[in-house]
Amino acid sequence: MMTLRTVIADDEPLARELLRLLLAEQENIVVVQECQNGREVIEYLGSNAADLLFLDIEMPGLGGLDIVKHIGVRNLPPTVFVTAYHQHAVKAFDVQAIDYLTKPVEPPRLAQAIERVREKISASSALLTQSQFNALLVDLRTTAETSRAYPSRLLVRDGEKEVFLPVEKIEWIEAAEYYCCLHSNKRRFLVRETITALSNKLDPRQFARIHRSSIVNLSLIREIYREGQAEGSVILVDGQRLRMSKAGKQRLLEIDKA
Image (cartoon, rainbow, N blue to C red):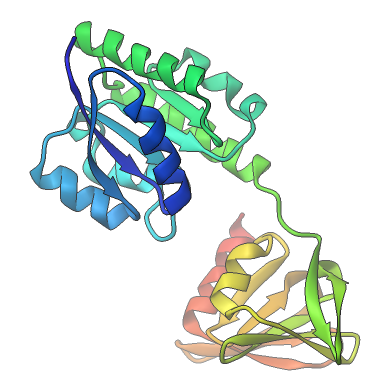
């Protein structure tokens, strides 16, 4: 039986450790590299051979799908996607020529995925055709968009206590070093998160980062002013004016097109 030189790519250390331990129980599997982000995956596969890649779909920066597009389908080793989505959300992929695992990974399902990979290798058809891969990308993106859960409330500081604030009541968010200040009904609440982390957490259909120091509730924008090529401003329904960067303006334009 062929020994599979295996690469694990996941930004979560515990997830990598669990998968490595499970793979150690499988015959003829050797983990040759662990990567914690997309850049490391691209660099390693650019100069090293691998027989099998376990690739997390969601990683900061370059996610799994971005990595596949960057490297190219024909240059990838047989790839098993790893996703946090529940099994029912990926059932439609069972007919695809590529496998996937849901977290937490279970030993029987892992063994099944490895067996499928071996069968594809022996049949010299481990990689997807371009058309199959394009179809898979569409399905995965659709699943990611519909399956991801965004918080409906945030735990914020209110004086000496902490309370839950419904996200729909947040009017806009202001960066304050390692904290963020949430403006709601003429009150301000602090949350210990960077504005980048908070922007990634909130539903992009409801909130947009219009400046490096501010996020706005899209439903509360009354007017948009374009002040030259680079910057502008938005006016909220209560009259609050917020600065808008060039990148922020582009985000609003993309939302409007969507």
